[in-house]
Length: 115
Image (cartoon, rainbow, N blue to C red; front, side, top):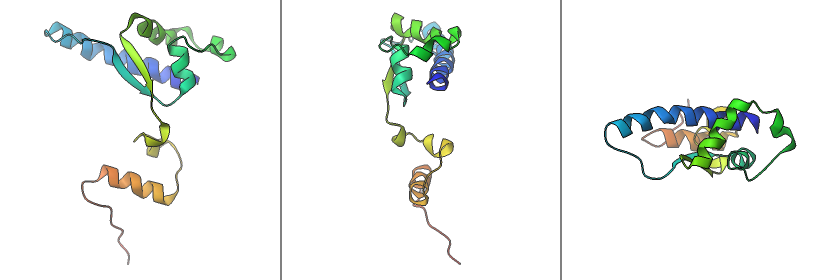
């Protein structure tokens, strides 16, 4: 949970700069920015819906994302981890699932070169 919560913190901080630039250019955003997360525990801690025993050991700077969710700047939505494109780079998958991921990243269908 801590690594996912830290990732929410990093993504939230990186999202602040483009929002500030767009606001300065006269294009303010109406409503919260959506961040997708595949960890329900991290999402619950960020929205203050869940209090975990081990969440007290999380570094306090990561709670910045919690404050931004409270203020309405960010909204964290659960997204099923199996459907995330980044999943193919971070986890081990069977061959058929790897081929499925490869077809999503290519413009033409995946073809094997059999010799």
